[in-house]
Each structure stands twice: as structure tokens, then as C-alpha cells.
Length: 103
Image (cartoon, one colour):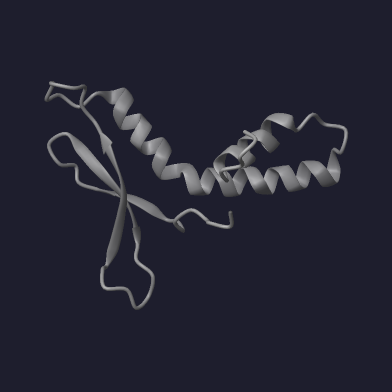
């Protein structure tokens, strides 16, 4: 599978009363200004007040592309300058983020 994630930057549209849409700018020539690809709920089921933990989850999702790229950069530097360093967690995290079947 050669599919890639939606290019960054990602941003939130909303908030609506209980959720935000995670969006990215549409590719040039597309019919839309932005593309919404995930909805993140900010309130617990049946409640109206925004839950701070759910809001932080949305923030983490928004930062995912930049976090993945930063981890890839650090992994490359560690492989070059610290080859004996245990990098298994970073390798597994990158694989998981990229949808590896074995993770």
C-alpha cells in the first residue's frame, strides 16, 4: 500500500457545539477550499460542556503530521550519529503512523 496521509498543515474548523472538523487545504485545482477528513468530538456523550481532555486529543491529532516528520528526522539523525541507541520505539511509532501491517 503506497497511500500517504493528507499533507499538512492540518487545522480545525469549528468548533461546532460539540465537535471540530480536522481539515487540510485542498490541492490546487480542486473544487473545494479545504477538505474535512475527520470529526473530533469535544464533549462526552450527552453533555454540552467541552471536555478539556477531548480538546487536547483534537490538538494532538492536529499536530500529528508535524510530529511524524520530526520523529522521522530524529530517527535519521540517531541512525547516523548513535547507531547503538535502541530506536525500537521510534521505528515502531513511525511504522504505526504510516499504517504498517505488522504493527
